[in-house]
Length: 228
Image (tube, rainbow, N blue to C red):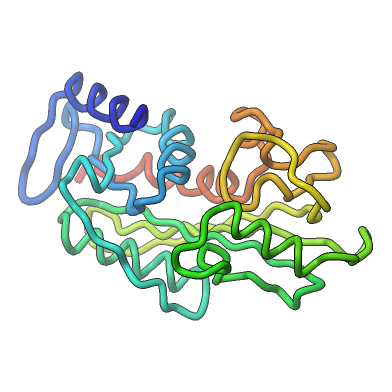
């Protein structure tokens, strides 16, 4: 709810001009739709986009209520499916990401099925419980894992662009930290001696897979809508 309030306040304080299906702010900023209904992702992506010139909006602010089936065979395909569908419905440049946790001992699982690993209605706690159960008794040296994120953007000309990032770590034996979402409480980053859920927002934005992908994406986003 805090994110939606922030987005509404930001929108009220900006001057929008809509021309030929494009929405710009003060003749410079494009309106960019974050194509996800995941509250945790919305918060992270909005924070990462804070320094860009785009005006960020969300599905709820655009009165869009859809769930896109993520039936691709890779993170890239799933990110593309979501960005294309939200762009088709909204007519706005759209950004979507798909992320996965890849655990070496589990032959890369949960991978592209990370969000639904505990079933379609599984909670974050369910996801972590299943992962820890599958790694029960596995020694620390064999608990290596990485998060990977692929971002897809459909730009103001309808063209598609991709950006990716990765964060290496291990899976801890118990939860630590209260920040983040998903598998963050058990994803341990050795160089920081913390789980992802123990990191501050600033620390996470320095090392996370999503922030690494987004930093590349922002360099492109800040060229969108300029001199067009």
